[in-house]
Image (cartoon, rainbow, N blue to C red; front, side, top):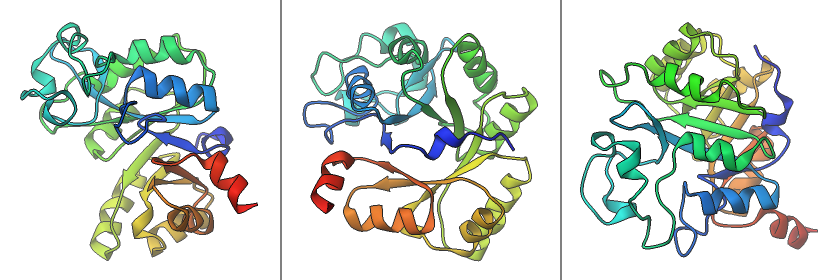
Length: 243
């Protein structure tokens, strides 16, 4: 297991430090700039453009954030880079643009959004883009096939399982993924506590939660996990208010 204490040292801004898509939208360079300025780690999502370039975007479809229909994977990174997000000045960025912006100033937690049967080269390409980057980076995914691909490619970064669920059958599937030799877990805060996470923490596995949006979920995180992935509030202000 890769020892990466920085993973749990500071709150993680979910898809960047956005304002719930009012003026600063998720997974944009503006949201990432705000996170860097505030000193938060950044969580974001990676999709695989049609020209084999990793881009930062959550949804499979462009409609919710960009107001147009279409599969993000059917466009090149160049085409995506011309599409506005939420009628703002922001466009869909590439992973390389995120790295150039961050420059190691805060940790990055990158979630690969997989599609079974359509991910050939995705894991390898992400690692190639990261090769010369100097700064703390972790990779994670819900998709076990991508975790296997990253392991096969000898991923040098902490590798995590993104997961949810509170049923024994969920835990069985999660346990299968953990057999790959993963380094951390990102788990749905609404499904804590549970036997799977309790057992993983007892053996020293770092756990971060998603997605914390209020003080109740924040408090639950710090009882049953190690750090939170948050959105919709400023943890610095909440801490001041609580004091």
